[in-house]
Length: 112
Length: 113
Image 1 (cartoon, rainbow over the protein chains, first blue to last red):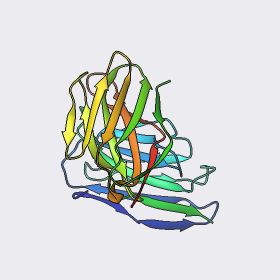
Image 2 (image 1 turned 60 degrees about the vertical axis):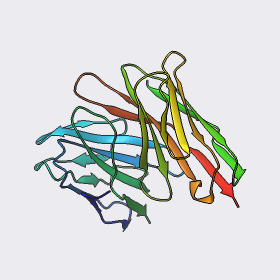
Image 3 (image 1 turned 60 degrees about the horizontal axis):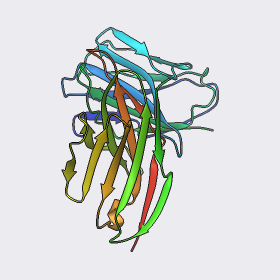
Image 4 (image 1 turned 30 degrees about the vertical axis):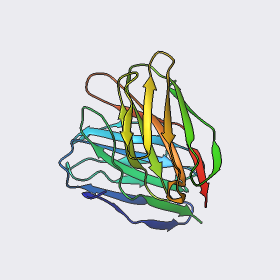
């Protein structure tokens, strides 16, 4: 969606390496979310942030870390502690009050 | 634990057919139900439903919510090959300030010419 930029679109990583996925938005939304999608499955919430310098764990936060130093940016780091990191990662900014989410184009991470 | 279940998991039809996709849920603090379409990339938003019995329509797509029976349906009439996609249902839950989406596993719709 316009105003949401995720990078890189495709990423390959060797086992044991950390990798950081970028999510930037210029929609002036307060809240931002990271979801993970595995083949044939729906989306699962990793982390979310409703305001700068604050973030909360979602349902599957283990092996991931985030930061929210600026309103526009919410990077996700997939650490070596994540046992099965190969997946499609989606970022979505939103109003803090909730409502529909509009997703970025996503980042496909493959662990070799 | 919040739960969203979609059925069928997959569906194959021919152009011109009408399809009905189902979504049932068991959640606490229901706020809204959303439908998304996904075609090998990020999901795109279709509908958000908050009130029972009020149909939302967009072209050949329509959706309705039943908050008593805890389900929603998505109808697609006169299907086209471009409707082939995964359709995701999500339920938003939360208190006064935060909305969390719980997704179903999706329905894979294939429309043959």
